Length: 500
Image 1: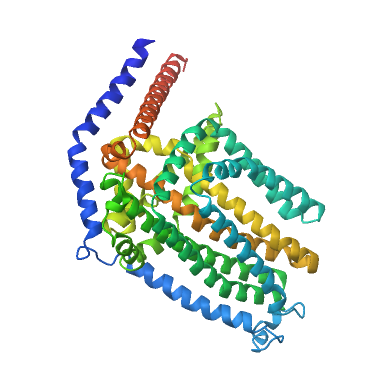
Image 2: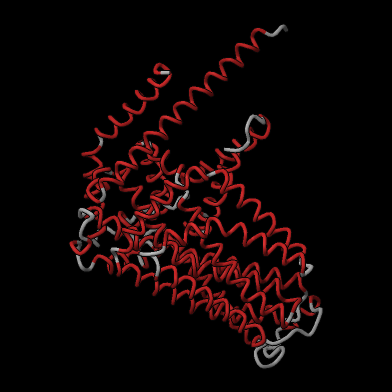
């Protein structure tokens, strides 16, 4: 037994020794990062093309939303634009003000849920996250039953599939949840020591709510239009993609601001956030909405979808067993997604906050940093992003249910349209609250990879727990690599022994 473990131990020791040799370099890079955050002259505008695309998208979409909403406000076909869609017209439609209140309910419920999360962040955050993990499956199952009862078979099937996938995912990562909750608890502790950051989150939630007022005005006009169901659904999908991108941009802007502040706190010892420069928050905010905003707009298009796909593939991959054909297909997808993660990952936003790099440059540097130090094994084991996503989904489902039930009572045939788009509104608003914690998590991992002493000075017990878990994950990976190598050698030997 000792012989089988010695290669693993030596591998880890060599990795630890290499990491120790780089500590001085990492400390210097960390100090340089802090100086970069504090200095304005070194900042340059990045990914300007995507900044222009996003702003143009906001202008075009804002004008379209006003037109779509006004055309059905107070009078049907007020702007006489129905004549351009005569061949798609199937009924007389309704009025914008008939459906707009349902979206107002969605905005109100989403805001209340998001503010409640931020309000109880310091005292009840862990309990709220545990509830999100365990109650989401049940909530989806209940919605599925209600949809079948209301003869909404498509949404019943989708909710049932969602409940099954959620249950399977939780089962596949149940052993990781204790460590995940530990990391989230420490991230909450860090964020709770930065009350100014909480106010920034509230401010961005207000900005998002104002944009949603305009967005829901146009969406209500689409629901009230005389177009057929197919055409209205397509328009709502386009509007939803736009809302998702806008919400992701605002969430990631908060992500950059919080990441910069957390990094500064850890650089300055981690014990007294008041010791950092008083204007650090304003500098971080200014960089996020100016020079780094293009990078945020670019990364927001892809990171969420790629992260979600990566979680699902990891969960399926761990439960396949010995089905060689299926394992081969999933491995191909896994390596494809891992390649994409190198260029689109949430850790890029910390590098953007600290160094002001472009998005792809930041993502690549962050991933190479993790792989060169072995911390990628720890990041892959952690499920904090998935847990926070579960809370966001639960908030969206509650919001969509509230608006959907009211719509069901008044206009049963419009319930799917209003309920699904209201759910997206709730997810965006609750996500703005969740991203505060996620930013702290990503910053903690980046700092641990850059210089473990940053975490040790902040919380020595947590540092020991992270180091122990990293040791275990490196041992596990080394054992799996030997097992695969032995299996391949055995298969090759067996094939050589087979008669031709």
